[in-house]
Amino acid sequence: MRKRILGKTNLDVSAVTFGGIINMNETPEDAARFVSAAIDKGVNYFDVAPSYGDAQERLGPALEPYRSRVFLACKTQERSAEGAKRELLDSLRVLRTDYFDVYQMHSIATLADYEQAFEPGGAMETFVWAKREGLIRNIGFSTHNEDVALKCLDAFSFDTVLFPMFFAMGVNDGWGDRISARANADGYGLLAMKTLIHRAWFDGESRGPYPKSWCKPFFADQEELAVASMKRGLAKGAATLIPPGNFEHFTFMLDHIDACVDEPLTPRELKLLEEEALRVKDYPIFHPEKT
Image (cartoon, rainbow, N blue to C red; front, side, top):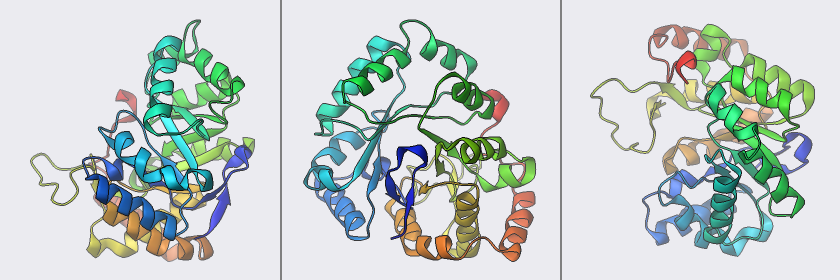
């Protein structure tokens, strides 16, 4: 698998990330099988969070034999220094590791989230302490809100930004372009989620084989669109793509990622995305002003 440098972290990461939610609600045997298959394909970047059900408990033992060969990222939604420290130490224990290569403030959605994390006694104090102590090596955050993301980048020299490069909102409204430009200009490592997402689920729509995905991923008969959307995420400067939370879409990314890296988005593929973005414009995965 192609590797790419994750911004100023200088980590040489696989162009596809193993999202820990893949292991959520799986048996220990299946979790170990999923991780082993990822390693065999050259995946070396794993990302998880304590908010993903039992994903940490499943990933820790499965990843332990390979820990020295991979990069492990984790997150916290705690906004206080005390809460973030407690959750960090617990995640280290559960994931059977001495440190995280990347640790992220998770889901910084509102101005209130930002203010709580950065105020005295806020989570950022724990992040700075943990890096000084060697418990984390790089500091990042995840968000769906561009305005809040830019405030975070102005306030602290983050190493990574985890952001949804959802094709429809990007094509229709330019959503995500400011983050892309800032990351490319300043060297932040950009990790792109939601590149295999098609639209929001309709009310009452069956999620079928994808119960872990809170928005509708591309289905098997939409391969051309899915590949084009992956290429668009890379074109925006992402070092690595995070698939939806099912093993099928993870393997889809693995099967197509080298071609996506080697053969950038074409004008024809962009036109396909533009046409589809108009069809699903009334079904965004969220509304930025409400995040």
